[in-house]
Each structure stands twice: as structure tokens, then as C-alpha cells.
Amino acid sequence: MKSVEKITSLQNDKVKNLVKLQKSSERKSQNLILIEGWREINQAIDKGFEIEAFYLNDNKIEEINRISGKVFLLAPQVFEKVAYRENTEGVIAVAKPKFHSLDTLKLRKNPLLIVLESVEKPGNLGAVLRTAEASAVDGVIVCDPLTDIYNPNVIRSSLGCVFSVPVVTCKNQETIDFLRQEKIQTFAAALSASKRYDRVDFTVPSAIILGTEATGLTAEWMKAADEKIIIPMLGSHDSLNVSVSAAILVFEAMRQRGFVSNQLSTKIF
Image 1 (cartoon, helix red, strand yellow):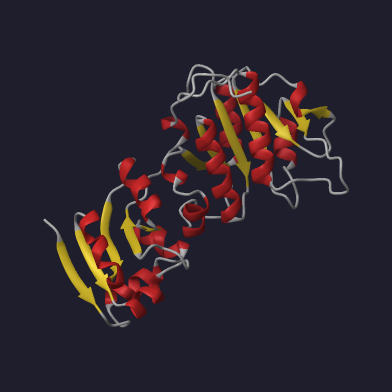
Image 2 (cartoon, helix red, strand yellow):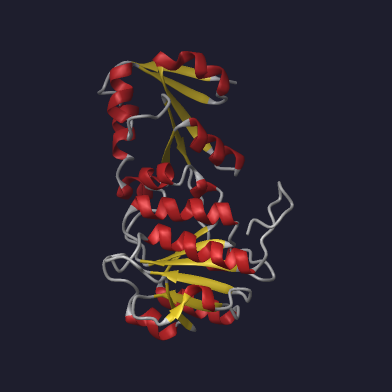
């Protein structure tokens, strides 16, 4: 049964809490996340995320029929206060997060993983998750993360793919041990490497390891990697955005594996 309550005051406790939940520490403390926009909310619902409540701009009251459960109608000035981004389609959901671990990560017979070390920018993480979803990798492992995987900007830049791609956060050494245990070859992208990315064999169980744009991978990963690879640069700059690098490397792996589109049933390369 749908429960609807109208809120017009900025001093309302629920409004104050929505503002608090924009901070990572509060999301962690309350075990809640904010999801803005219908596409992202629908992705979360489709993947079984529990929605605690919807907050709808009462200018969008015609959208209420799309919602089941607890609904709060916010006066426009109140909604503007709690919205994290400019274009939210007038809807915010408060939901319970889900967290994956290395132990629960489901790997195919010939897995392909993306590993990110100390990713800092939410936009970069979100873009990598879009690539991960588009290429149907087994998961994304974020080592020593510097950003919350459910940061609203991660949700937005991933277009909700953070809900459909298994994302694990853990320490470097945990990941290294896991990949060795699973006999997964590690390919570290590094400017100091000499082997081109398209000259290695990605048809084996593979993990593509990427570091930050500013400093690259740490010595820990450089020592642990089975192969060190490079994307050749022809211009004056020596590196690409980490999300672009991830896309190039992952889709080269998919090309080598003869990836077949489920929709077209033909090779895409």
C-alpha cells in the first residue's frame, strides 16, 4: 500500500537527513545510499536493491503512479535543497546498499576482471563501471579505494551500472592472493612497460590492472603482475584517462575472445 506524506519545511528531520546522506561517513554509518533519477533507480530495483523510501518533487506528482511503497512529496524549494545533481527527474530514492566480497564473486570458467588501485575520482570509477557492464566482465575489484563506490557521482556517471556490476573493495595483497589462487593472469598497465597491449594473450583467465592517472600503479602491483603492458601514445601526452584505458584494454580482450553480441549473434570485431 502506498503511503504519501507532503513535506514543505527545510527543517523537517527527513530533509535534514537527506542532506546528511550526501556525505560518505553518514551513508556508511546509516547503511543507506541515495539514488537520483529514474534510470538509476530502476537499475537498482531490477537488481534487487531494497528501496526504503522515495522523495518526489511535487512538481512531478504525475510520476507518483510509477512508485510503490513509502513516498514523500517535497515542495520544490525543499527538493532543490536535497538534490545532489541538477537533473534528477524530480525523484530521489533512499536504499540499502549491497556489498560483494572476493569470496562471493562468481567467476566464469574463463574470467575477465578489471582491477583498479586507489581510484580517487568518482567520475572515473563510474565510467569504468559502464565499460565493465558493456563488456560483461566478471567484476570490478577496487583496491584501497579513495572514493565510496556508492558516491552519488559514481551512481550518476555509471548510469546505474554500479548496481548491475559486481564491485569488490579490498586491499592490494588480498586481491593479489585471490588472483593467484584462481590462476588468473595479471596484466598491469604501465608507462614503463615495453609490451604493447595488443601483443599479449587475453584469451586466458585475465585481470587488467590499472592505477591512478597521477601516479600509476604502486611497486606492489608492478612486482606482482605477470605482464606489464602499455597503450602506445602517438601524440605529445603520455597517458590516457583511466576509464578510457580500461575500455581499450577490456575490449581488446573481448576481441581476442571472439566476443559475440547476444542481440546480433555476430562478432563485433
